[in-house]
Length: 254
Image 1: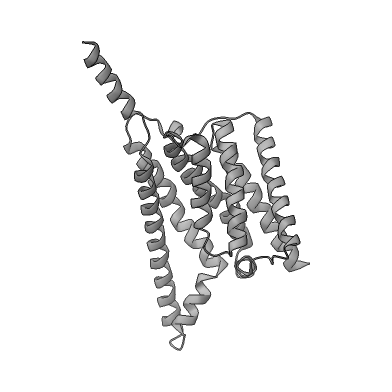
Image 2 (image 1 turned 90 degrees about the vertical axis):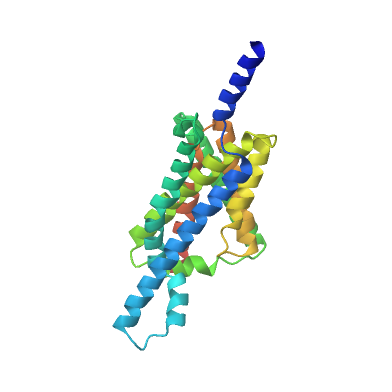
């Protein structure tokens, strides 16, 4: 009887676990592919409309310009945001036994720890900026091009400072962190791996910027582990992106 009870308890415990690391990684890749496909479809439709309006248009050049257009990136982000977050929530829901808010670590945190986390995040950003100045690293041209071609600056700021932090943190510091920290890797392994994967997806930047993004990821992951909540990393990410956007605006407008 004890053996049967133990087996039943093990089964119940397993049902309450998150998806395994490799399954979670595969699901994240799937989410990424779906979002890329949606963006490609949107780009094709956009180019077709432009070609109809101007038959002499060079599609190749227009496609390159569109890939760096702040307006297009903003609209594409608006399109993919519901899918990236929605699919993440769906995959959490499919794993029976864990509530979505527990799976993604949507836990309330007091104001003091949140402000402390934001302050630490901005300090890390300041140190990375100082390192960039010492190493004479230029501000990525991609940031200037995106800003200048925003079309609507409020929309671009909304995407960069609100939507991107929410979707990325829900996926990496929420969904992925939960899966990795539940294994032998623990919180430390989860922080390192999620930071590395998060940094690598920013292929639009050079090696130095990707390295700084990895460092930001470590700070975000530590905040996630220390508070047990994904909310501080989201707010830290928002603050870091907001400061970066202001920096670009100051450089452009003097």
